[in-house]
Amino acid sequence: MKISYFKRSNRPYEEVIKDVSKIFSAKGWEVKGEGEVNNGKIFYVFNRAMMEEIINFNKDFVGFFPSVLLVFKEGGKTVVGGIDGAFAANLITNNSATRLKSIEKMAKDIKEIINSIAQAEESRPKRTRIFSTVHCPYCKMEKDWFEKNKLSHEVVYVDSDQEMASYMVKKTGQMGVPVTEIEFEDGETEYIIGFDKGQLADIFKVSN
Image 1 (cartoon, rainbow, N blue to C red):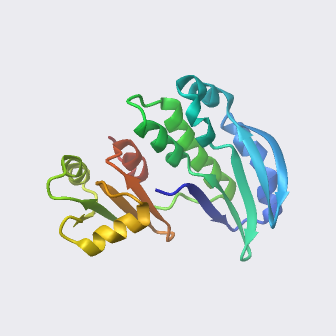
Image 2 (cartoon, rainbow, N blue to C red):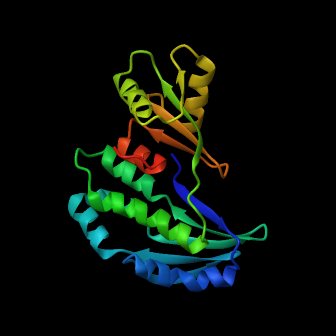
Image 3 (cartoon, one colour):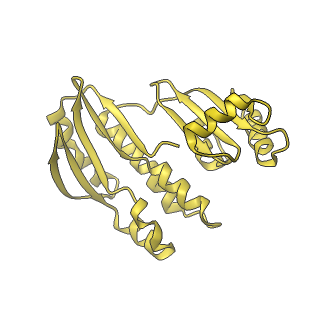
């Protein structure tokens, strides 16, 4: 899956910069500092309640907490982004039987904040492929979930298609299935490792 989440904005760079603190504050986050980088600026952001819950849960995950926002100029556009909160949430959830609601809120907050700063809508899925094997029970569960929610998808059986198996490994570094490839309308592609029903529901805007 994607590690970072970036959105292009049609707004002037200086206008975007002015809105960063206000929009983070509205979500209960703080901007603790900022620094200049080539063609842009980095903001150091913090949410105390979420950070404390992560530390109490497992301090090993503290490094994956989103704490930096990057705003920069590229090709005449302003680009806003940082670590994808869904990446951190997925990593933490996959390493524990416990699903922290604050982690899911963090993932949602980060995307909403970036979209709000950029004044961009979240891009919708355009094409979905599920990399599967014939006898994988979790793959069947995911396919059943897609069918139940009437979501368009393609199933690729990597145990009988070596070319697509190599493609999956090259793109994700994963040999296990299911792996879900989602292409978005803005040209971005995201990979979801395993049957992560919560993340899929968030992307496709359906209930679990």
